[in-house]
Structure formats: structure tokens, C-alpha cells
Amino acid sequence: MNETRKKIIVNEIMNWRKNRMLPEHYCDFLLALYTEGNEPENMREPAAIKKIHWKNHYLFLMLIPLALFLIHFTELSITLQMAFSILFVLTGIIFTFYFFRKGILLQIPLIASALILLLSTVEFISRLFPERLIVLYIIIFLNCFLWLLTGWKLKLPSFIISGVLGIILIVISIFVY
Image 1: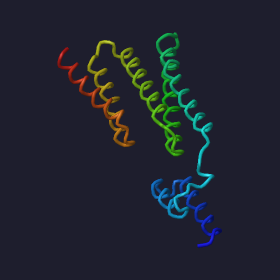
Image 2 (image 1 turned 30 degrees about the vertical axis):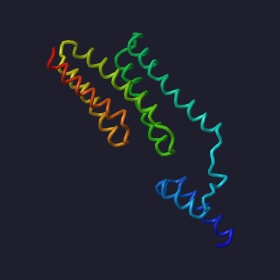
Image 3 (image 1 turned 90 degrees about the horizontal axis):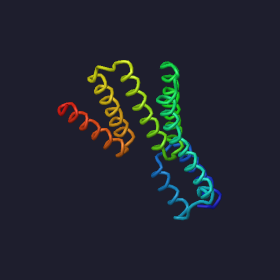
Image 4 (image 1 turned 180 degrees about the vertical axis):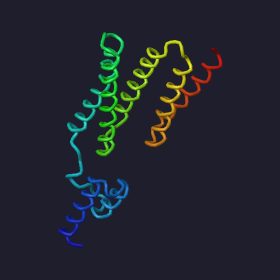
């Protein structure tokens, strides 16, 4: 096969990979086949770009103390606190989907969203129903079940383990107290 045809095919496979038209391992196989084991130059990502991705991920961890500060240490109304919490959780979820589509590490915004959701729901339920412990157990159980479901759907063992351990601790807590 002549070189121009190979370049056209390799570029097309890389376009499929970029737009996720084929699974990544299929694209890797086809690229290895058509390039005879040599990785194309434009497929390599510089180290500086990878470092930028990591730095942007840690900004999501800053949402947790910010949400904690807005919920616990300010005298904002409960509706404004709920609005901020919903905004933070939605931001984390939107960026999780964005990172998932780009093939970038998605655990950090997902963890930040899960923790903010847990903190805000526990705070709001404890304010709205201060004497009803069963409602608090139900909300925590729903959060753990959501973690379990997210871990199963996205194949994230950390979320599966957290969900299972959370449910076990809730059950133990209910029967001990």
C-alpha cells in the first residue's frame, strides 16, 4: 500500500478515535496495524498538556470547603444555601460528563459532587426534621445507593466500595442505637 493511502487511513482512524466513533482499543489496534507498530506523531500528547489537566481537576476539590463554608458558617437563608449546593453539585456533574466525553480523569469532580450532595442533604434534613432520625437514615441510605449505582454504571470501584460500606454502616447504626 502506498504512503499517501496509509496517511489517509491513519488520519481517518485518529478522527474516529477523537470523536469516539469506535472504542479506543479498536482504534489502537487499527493504528498499530496501519502504522506497523509506530505511533503517529500527532497522536502523542505533550507532557505540559497533561499537567494542565491535573491542575484543573484539583480546582473541583476547592468546591468542597467552599460549600461547607456556605452551608455551615454563614447566615444565609436555607433557600440560598440550597441554591448554592445545587449549583455546586450540578457544576460537578456537568464537568464529570464533559471529562467523560473527553476521556480525561473524571473521579475528582464526581467525588466533589458526591460529597457536596451528602453534606448539603444531611444539613438540610437535620434542619427541616431535627427530631426525625429515620428521615436522616433514609437520606444517607439514598446517597450511598446513588454512590453504588454511579460506581456500577461508570465502573468505579471506589464508589462501589463507598456505597456498600455506607449502607453497611447505616444498617449497623440503626440496630445499635
